[in-house]
Image (tube, rainbow, N blue to C red):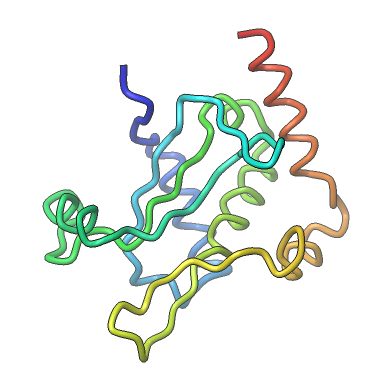
Length: 150
């Protein structure tokens, strides 16, 4: 059994909406979205999602699927168990958070890169989520409960 699987059309549509709404600079970035089927943690915290910049090998291996001679620029991984059990608003927050890790520098040979958090989160996300600042903790709690049942 593979650790990863392709996301469903509704997830692709939601990622497309988030990119159009908040990240117009990424409109031309080629992004592969995958469900991660295995519990992942980092620094003692459950990982809800992660963003990866592709390397030369991944770009080469994804040229056919991406309909591009250059392959995908990014791969977004979403924990499937958690994603499928959180509210739509939190799905948007999670996708938006992962997209914040993408940075584009049009003057570079490869304009796409990954950036870390500017604080524990991104300042823009704290502002956008001011009415529900603990959304990620709530989703992680849901995820831990689901993994404990599993």
